[in-house]
Image (cartoon, rainbow, N blue to C red; front, side, top):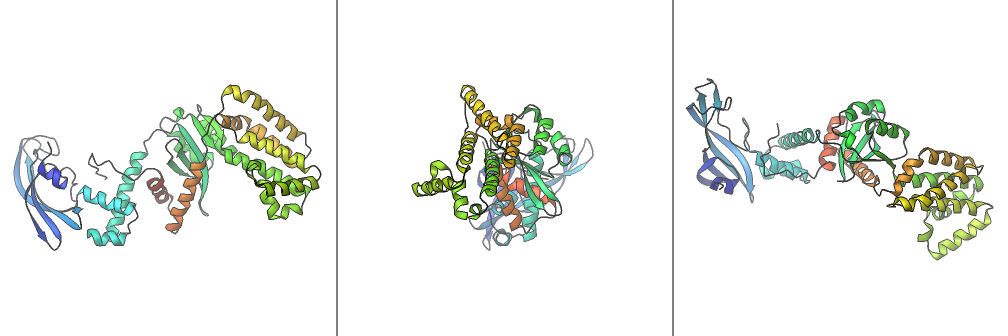
Length: 407
């Protein structure tokens, strides 16, 4: 059964002697009541040499800060001959605050409270708030560094700085958390980090855009994973090449923002007036209607997902026929598109089986950009990585059942 001190102030192995109030602060006098043993060898054959009092800040009750005036002992081990100090669970040596108090400051700052406000409410300096916050983040990052590779992994790049270039984001798409951020986007930059990933052979699916570098990296470091292209990037690629051909067929019409909006819209989502306007325009340009129908047919195939193998068989034949039509069209943009679709045909067809995309990864990139902007940029990539993992890699909630003691 928990002791009264543990129920009241959350510290175990101490005995409360008395409490008093001074200037809106509560002072609790207590003494260590746990089992005394040598901290070096664990022997219980010890002799108490002295006692001293530690003044510790310990959480808040309402607006009052609790100061624990804890009496601990200086003890001599008769077996190993070493002199040690009594250690209390939840209070690290040479600290003037308990771990619960430090955790309270961390959570307040993590939730958005400024250092200035926390400095006033908790009676500590602003630099102390930053130091404690960084210590908890460092501890959590070290703890998360040993995680096993996620089963469904998203890979994408994002811009870091003009001097250091791009960084690669690894996202756990099943749990929607950032797994890691690595500086660089070449195989040479990522090799050391990816080769040390625990259980990387257990990765089942890797979702990425149509970047040849990432595909070769995924094949080498995740040999058992199926590579799936991101649906958004495939649709954007198709629209890009068809719009490029449209500019060749009608240079003047392609400059109209209204027509550009109509050409990009989903046909099933268009309003009747917009559809009627588009139909009139397609009839004005020779051959444009046939090209638009081929585009819509290809886009309808690219939007399919969660299909069974029997459902995919006739669609694969239809996809190959469309690809062959593009190859024989005689238009350079469509021929280039056909070559790309042929090179990525296996990864594209796997989109029909899976519904996972890199949408979560792109969302995290927006959040990373906000983090960098609020910090007025980062020079040190290590600090940037820690902040990203702290805000995007976990929920910021510590397990209070076990005492957290970051070092």
